Length: 320
Image (cartoon, rainbow, N blue to C red; front, side):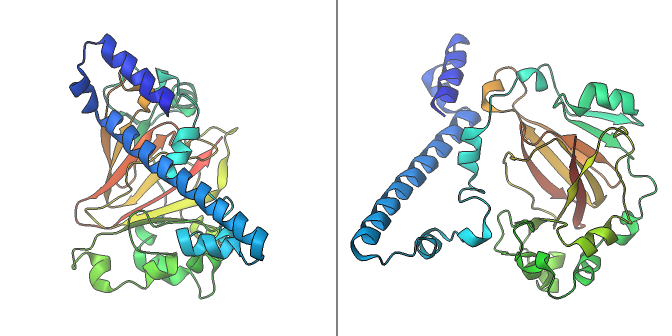
């Protein structure tokens, strides 16, 4: 984190910016907030560990998982890693990015009927984002996928509904939902946006029976070559107009694609801080049904916003 601040400061000074102007840069503000959050988290963790060790040594009374659950809301048994979803720490640990991914860019490129060769050469592994229009021809997902379809597809007891399986990941973003079951139990008024309480969530296709049914309605994007394989884990993202995913960066293994099935959704990308002075600070594009966007979400900070008056549904996966 300190090195990122130093690099940005040096570049800003070389361009003649004053201290006041530097302090107002969006990237500097974001890094400062993350630095404060991480410092507080680390301090709290150290204090908790000291208290727990002392009590354990003297009285043998500490149940550390229960203590963490009561203090931080962390359920160790349900998490593959203690700090799995703490974004500031993930951001600090990410490798530096080669700014060729965004240098000289002014917008997210839009293409039609891209060939496998062109996609592989220009986009597949360069981390340059691209939007492919009308890329899901023949997919029955467009006339099948809906909120009601998903709700009926997941049978009672499915591990995806309660997050009882560590492979069943659920992203509530900034909603109060704790699992997919609660999403399907929401009121009709909230689901349709009548109450003015927007929502946006995502989940993995960890239920094999559901996964097999879903994959009857879509296929690997046509521009992914024969040697490219998509992950066994697919993701569904769904939300109401006026909401979306907050600005974040992922920690997944590979680049990913995402197809717009219903509704419209705006994607907003920001380069990593080390590329702030070499790349546009923000670029965006709007996805319509049938479009596929390819983004290396490990390198690009990204947020989304559902547009229009219809629920947005997208499906996506990683590829190699």
